[in-house]
Image (tube, rainbow, N blue to C red; front, side):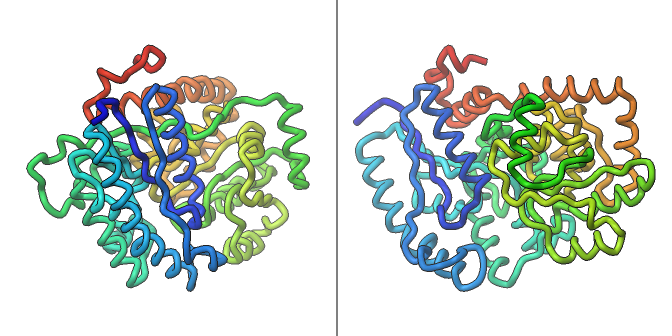
Length: 394
């Protein structure tokens, strides 16, 4: 049997198009390989899902379930058997906790999972602060995910906040307790950096949107917990003190938000950039006056450090995970109080404070370098001393 360590990453079902989780998995794959570790990527195969417009909702969701939870477990079982028959030094890592049921088919002492958040699980259990209610079947699915996630021997949690919430949901203590449950902050899953004004202008011109005024930026989905509405309330409160726009980047604006903007007389001050490509997203971060992230709940909060890496000041919710990620380098406010966000925004008229936030933001992003994350994952499985290369030395 081979003694060379090998890591098998278990990715997401591609038809679900979970972009952030796909980027995370491929980022792990790239960085493990850079560290000189033999790494492979296993991804659930798409069979019935090819007949669906979407596997996230409607009938297509059930086709996706057949692929993910009925067909692919058999494929994974055979794949794992083949791998462990060739080497006793192979480790399996499930990149997204929503796939924790696959742990059933993996050797428990050589397998782990990354827990990005427990928002959906807590929402299914009825926790109102999760802002993520579930359907009847959703509750069953989340119970299943919770069952395997809380029994995993090796768990990488993306924040202290998420780890504490996960521990609170643990169904039954194992012999090992939480010894192999560790906080491993995410690193960047793409390149975010300052751009020249010329680069920004070229990219934003391609969007065919009018960026003729300063704007606040929000990046994310239209889920209730993302609290998009707060930005409208915020600039309504600012009134004549600021006449800039709001740019929502990510999912398109829903009818409810559009109607609310109209009721406030702000419909002409909204810019919507649907699913921007990476360079356009970086340009938006660079061009924004401030990045606003008023979520009610987050497991980590990538956009905070993405904005900071582009040299943009951040105002985020004062929830635990975002305060942990910013480490005091952003302004924080109560996500239920738009007046606090408005006050924080006005405080940035102080150029000294603004420059301090930008400089400290750049310093904060150094905590999320890929090499630190790689070392932490190797540490999780107890193989870091042997396989840390000089390039990845702390």
